[in-house]
Length: 300
Image (tube, rainbow, N blue to C red; front, side, top):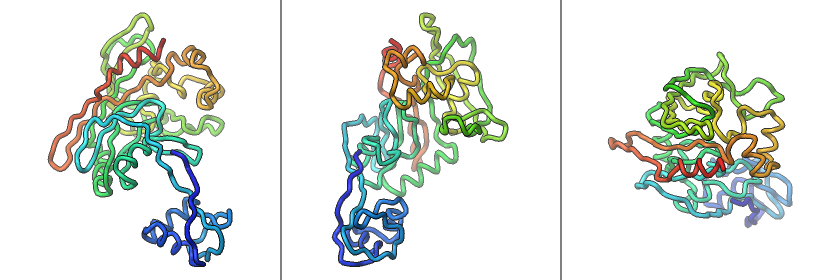
């Protein structure tokens, strides 16, 4: 998705009126665009909705750049997509060239959006609401912990038995650290994850796990496995120094260097199953791709 500037017709009206007339939107939607710093007049940012605009009026908008995405399931209210590793769930700034939103808005329009998020390097199933009502209802299911999520991951080391981690999580308190990194702390939000052993691979000393997060904290599975000294293969955040993390996030490492540093070319974490009830109907959707093969290819 590229951010581009488009010209708006203008006849000396207030900022919100120019937006409403050109885009056929409500005053609230016009205010949101102004708050997001998207409107300019003669190259100068417009910050007040009542400002009279005289000159060249331009608006920063999204230009969809769809590349194709696998739809695992779809009905009139929502769809479940198969997100690839390395793709943002939602654009994260004006320098973002592509995200899953490119596909979503291309297929179903600007009202459609993800009902939850996956980390950039996490692959697998993601639930998309097609309209505002579905968005409210589906997000409520996640907030009320009524969506059962299951993940597959490849973790360092030989794990001997199934286990549960019940450790609160919060953003790291070290301001010199990477700002998105989470940590175990007593003052954090409750986080519980169940882990089930599926297979051990002695050649790479790694264990394939089925992970069931009972809460929905940021980086929950990743933080809990790192806490147990079984960091996920390919993790670009946990178990590394700030300098190493930055070298990965800034894409300064070659694939070979990243493989040596983290054990994989990508984060080996995959959203495998979503189970929930919606409008009195039960849904149990599984990922269709062979993630074991993909994980295997990422460690070579």
